[in-house]
Image (cartoon, rainbow, N blue to C red; front, side):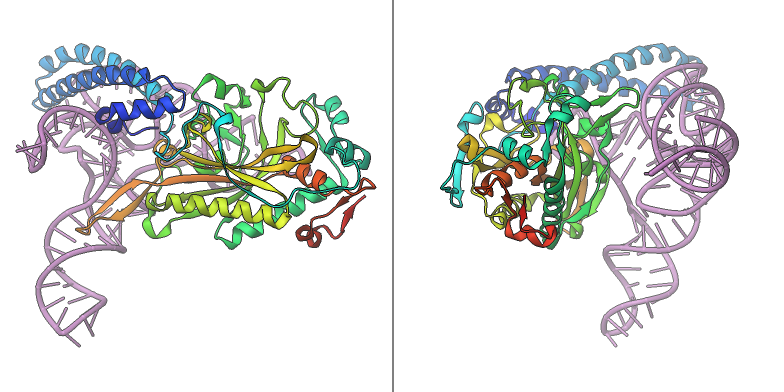
Length: 415
RNA sequence: GGUGGGGUGCCAGAGCGGUCGAAUGGGUCUGUCUUGAAAACAGAUAUAUCUGAAAAGGUAUCGUGGGUUCGAAUCCCACCCCCACCGCCA
């Protein structure tokens, strides 16, 4: 949610910001109009209520009675207007930081740096689907029988790789003060809304909703970690609050028919380790760098080639003000593909979740302000598995286990 | 799934139709006292929103949403959540 006062006082700036994110600037005018109406109604209703209260206290029951109907009808239109106002306000995306490159979509993201060498082979490398099938560690055919398209079984070495990756990611993040969490994967709709993922039709189509229970399946553990502190006020000294969550993630992939239909790159269900941080607004820039740093550390530990992208305004998504992606080299596609993403959502989610912190002002008075929230992928299992399998393949079709994972795996090779 | 109990401010806990934004205790903060601290004493201590330059004032908030009433923390309805026990279950 955006700060109402920002829209009122700085409509041009807000227009400019949302336009960069491909939202219609007219949203601002729409809001200002309804806001004006809402204020008028509020003032009127409050005045009448004050009158009624006074009469009531003086036991002028008849006179108070006369006001009742008027107030009730005013309250009704106030409720209606309020609801509409809220709806419009919720349509606003977070504003991008000034230094985010302006662009219409993912084609205009900017490569910040490229790290690691591309693998070289003296044989014809295979893609992970073939490798995984031959080794019997990835099975999408059986999965399509049991569950339909875009599902997969990870077996044997692939399953063991997952657990090794989880352990590595958890341990790495824990060293930086992240508390490990296994969160619920079903959350209430109000929490999903607060995280800013179901405001628009397109977003709704992406999530699974359990009608009978009124619960959403999370698309990332960010959605259930954010609400952990909903309604809380932190002491300044308790920030940052860092979590690293492991959870299964569910995505309908409704808008991606025909895209990446084979294999496990784009599936309805995968496991992911996700970092999440609640922090002092002053430090959110630094915190973002920290999270990106951990992602890179993990990539370097796996010795995979990757590059870091600064995501442009048009590709940011609703809650983020700034975002980096890491794309990892996928030999069979001869290109880098997205494996990690980290966003600074500033106070956008905190406003709706109502998460604040107490700070001392200069004259040592206490006041509260919203925290900033950030999230970032440690490992998205399916995708990082693909990268490992392809980049570490051997001539005989076996997969060398990356050195850092051998201790967890107990083997050097998957064959 | 069943039965019973319950959700009140930072915490504990009273209130069960008006004078209640809410007793009392604890905590926290400020001041007095003190070389310093403790103790004692005095005072302060919610949030949101509207009007206003400000001072100030209005309104709303006792799990959530409706309703009854001139008036609701208090009565009614629905929902959510928590606790205990029973059943089922990894």
